[in-house]
Figure 1 (cartoon, one colour):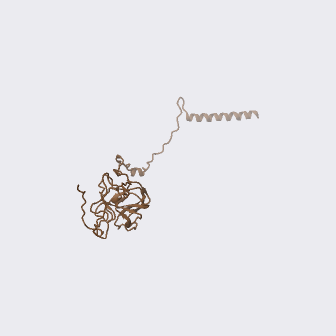
Figure 2 (figure 1 turned 180 degrees about the vertical axis):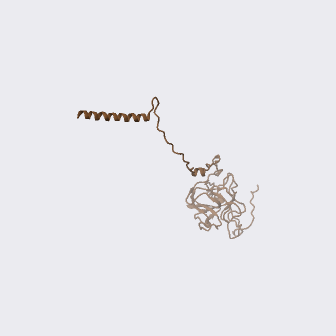
Figure 3 (figure 1 turned 90 degrees about the horizontal axis):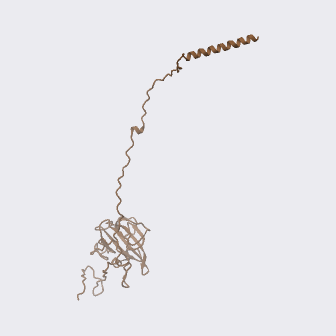
Length: 275
């Protein structure tokens, strides 16, 4: 029994060794390195070319901005009157306002259409003064106060009425009054307004620009002074309320006949008294 098992074990070992040598002989040759198993390369297949949107439509050129070189800050040529406003040299003087046009411009009223004039007809009385200036000239607040109107329609008191003879107009209720009554100033025929209703402005602040909106014969600012009520029927001669240039004054009066009636439509020559 023992001899039979030993013979079976010997035969098994001999067969395994023979199988190993046979496999080794298949992979190796005497005196040469091992030969690797060849790899079969797949045939190259042509891939379709993929087109992208960026290739079809290239990106646009970036925006190019040409920015101008900033200039100097604008400086207004407005200056206050040489006499401080309000200014009075007599109890009845009330020069409370500055001129609505800057000192570097012609800023005195048209001589042939002053307060009370009837250029457009005897029933159309001029309730202010007209200061001719080029289109776009800045219009300045004659004194500090609150803007109570900035629109069309001031003459008829109908907001937004673009048929109104005053055109684009601004009204200011001032921070001061006269004889316990409220003062207002009016600026009419603007081409453009620079303020809104309710805004507070200071003396010399730009409130708009000269134009010819409304009933006009050319660009100018129509300037009014109103006392006690912001109404067409409560106007006063603005030339008696604007501080005059240094060395100047204002001559005011009325010409009547022997009965005390006002004389109208008569040319008056005013000259200094001869020594």
